[in-house]
Image (cartoon, rainbow, N blue to C red):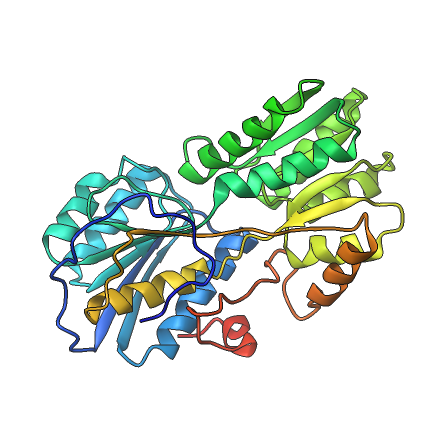
Length: 338
């Protein structure tokens, strides 16, 4: 059974479920509610590539569109009706999907949530540690500005559990720095164009600030500074290829990237196949621990230089695989076939 090397303590335990009998020929259903975002696109490509790499997977049905929890509920019910063996989803809400998820689990369909959690009993969760992701980046930013000042806080989508978890991490760091305050808070919807325009709009107000924390909408925030001619401030983002490139290339720009691999999508497919083959883990929640890369030290700059990947879309994380879980090659995930 595949086993993740970097895990946090499990949040829940359950007896092994009586799912499939290891017969192979599985059909995996995928449900995602954000389209056009580089991280989510990599997640989908990782799912496709891993499904192709799994000898026991015969088909993949992908519901991939911009929608809300109500739309995702519809997509999940359609996947159940299609007779899939497992559903791997990035949930729009931790609780609002339970009617469909409960029905799927009752029907013997494996449910694996990736990137964010769900509360349905019997569902498995394989996610980046979102609270720690935000905490690491926020703490670095607050230290970088000398422990005092005002920051811009650019979040994801309100109500999505990944954003809620990240806010918990951000607030935990903020509590450790009483002389740091948030001058402007905005939800980007995890959309590059929207986040960039929001940064342009705030820069135009002339309100001073000392740093920016972003929820993975990052290289376009740097673009907003460059294109507007505004003085650069420290910026925290994710390990997206374009942002990592900027950390390496732009003179005078100080920033940090926190790893947040979209390849958890592929790992979720691998976990679903393990469960279907009778290799269900005892722990129902597995968290991938993030790492922070900063360009304010020689060691950090060396790490960033080693992570550069010009072959990737600028909005894709450079962490394209998760050792111990995903089996595809770099070429296969970029091809996004399967």
